[in-house]
Image (cartoon, rainbow, N blue to C red; front, side):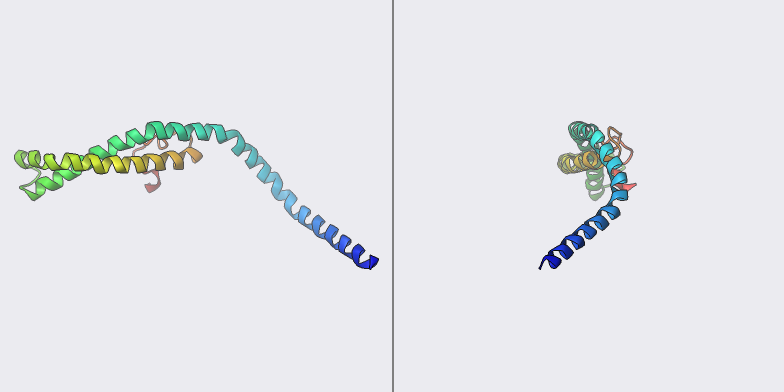
Length: 140
């Protein structure tokens, strides 16, 4: 009986030693990255908050202007072509409201996506504020 308890204790001690020896080299690398991540956390959080406050309105304006032009051209093409003035004026009557509505919704989505996605890798970058050349930074 005493022998079995001793054998269990020795086996548990041996398994603990093996587990510690396997994990120790990995912990040294993880500790450095953990300290780096902990130090950068306030910077990333501030970048994310600023990216939401600044990036969403910027993305809304950019997407709304692109969608207004696109919808106005599409509506004008259906009634005479976007090369002529009168079809463009009538196309703008429907194109502007639809473009503003769709563009505002897309701007909220892409502005939030850019703020969350880019603040971790590149805090306070143009991409985090939706000011990059591509609105969706993951697309390039």
